[in-house]
Length: 329
Image 1 (cartoon, rainbow, N blue to C red):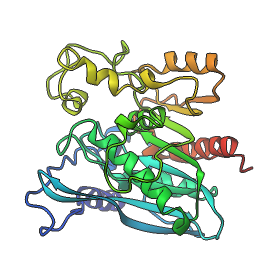
Image 2: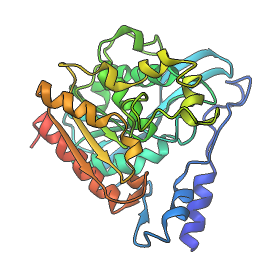
Image 3: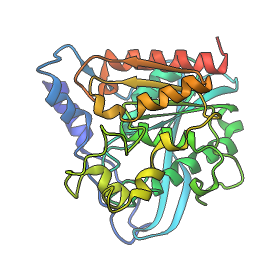
Image 4: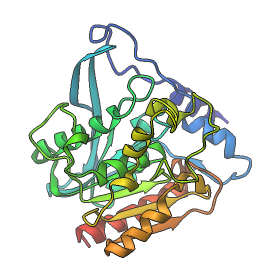
């Protein structure tokens, strides 16, 4: 119980990202999505699970809260965007994985991806959880521009952090999975780039890992016209499907997939609604001969990656997939 209280205090004490001198108005924060809350909801049905924690394993080094882009003129003033870097303590150039957190495009933060990033880094990768603007601050496509900017920064600073720029994958959990899939399937499309931060390097990635993230907002399992106006997707996309069909289509990774789409790993919970559009995309990937894997966690826990033993299994699937794609066995 003492450990759980400590975890609760840590999770609900979200550090401020910006100092008062940098912003004219406090960025609104929704802290409703956190490990402690999910744990309280699932511990009765899954008493054996253990919440993940940020604990840098022996043999790894970490770099925290590096600024990858500065937005000078947001409604909240000057805005820095941050990322973390974890990697083995060797001097080799290694493949990298960008990690995008979930939270309904409204809540959560990059710290929730740190434990998974640390687990994956132990397998010989550079792992990079990234911050992005949430819907209370900026609606679609701001988060896409942010993440593409982060990838460009990573490539521009690859020598410093020992990254092989030809072997970069992107992963995401829940809303982050939707974002990772969209970022990966829009490789090379100028309208998704934005002009934030580093602009001269490429944001192209070579693999996608979608962990319980929607592929197509217009798929039957996702498109629900009876939603409330403040539903997470409606709030992020700036309106319902009937109001903004163009945006719902543009934000759907499945719409942009084609014969040049990179390999994809899908990790799924026992809730099918979070996989909306996945089956149709898999059918296309098979037709195009694009390598893909699907692994199902048959548990009624959406954020399964936040708890052991599922976090360990997830890290294992991701590391094995990346080793296959990047031929690092």
